[in-house]
Length: 320
Image (tube, rainbow, N blue to C red):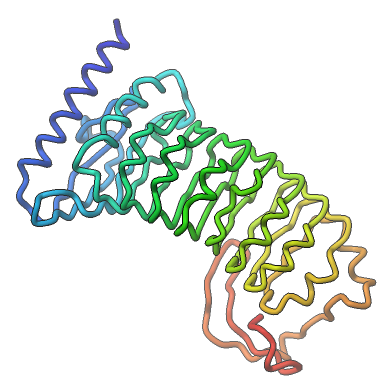
């Protein structure tokens, strides 16, 4: 039937690609790579597909040391699931391939898989992974073998809870579950090594007490959830510099929040506490622009430009 034909076609293309990689003796190769609407792997089958660049670096032994990006693209709804079995089969073949074993960076964005194959556990050198825009809601136990993974993006997936297996990754420093369906965070699911935690646009009503284990946490993004309170354990995150918690249901703020030693950016708009906190004796006073000595630009975003600055009223305070 049609399904068998698609699988066979995908297999032929996967075999052809692997053979092409083995034949090449170049130090750096560039291939157009796409993921068609039928979820079959292959080198650019038609000019109307958006090309994606695959950059490879080979060791002297001929194995891949690094994938700058492996980014298949679907030309229709990335969350479609009718072809998920085909996508899963092709993804499993690719991940199981020996040419990926030394890869450091892997993007499976918008490929249409609803489960990550167990073969992912073989890519023990991975440092950066992007699973965004797939209907994935869980991770396999083999994910715990990715001991070098530093960055994980899951934008627009279907996770309802952060998988506990992520708490076992010793190098994980940036974790993004933006725009999922998170309702809970299991105890132990947050790796103590985290420095960036992005949980924007979910359905979280509470943070786990174990967040206090993240002693090196610098940035915490909680905008547009359903949080009613912040846990006292957050006070232990003494390296926290930025927290975005706008558009939640925070009726009150913990007293320690304004005393955190490095907290320089706090966004709370859209919470019930905003109006109430203006009358608190401990609330910070307004800072006039004329009181700030502006320094170098730190970054830009939708909210504007961020610069380091010295406050003349308190020159030894953290950057604002």
